[in-house]
Length: 125
Image (cartoon, rainbow, N blue to C red; front, side, top):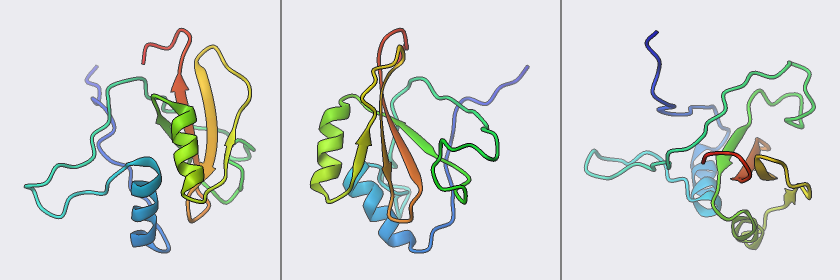
């Protein structure tokens, strides 16, 4: 079987794309596509990526009107949470440490859920 090699992009609608681009850059370091081919785009590190559909009525995403949730792998959850809070955002850190790591939740400017994951335990990332 021929398989895809990874996620090449994540595209979604936004009410204010410019403000949302700035939010992701300022809070998570995810830069938007470059304006020319001479500039480098944001690159992710190799590691585990979970691709999982959820039931349409899941509570996991929060707002039932949200159809997706991003999960970003991070090296230092505590430091990133502090950075996001220093930028004036609320972040909820899950107090439980799971076999595959630690998690936190933040919402972007348009209320989209963002899960932050610091791999740990038996996860190979």
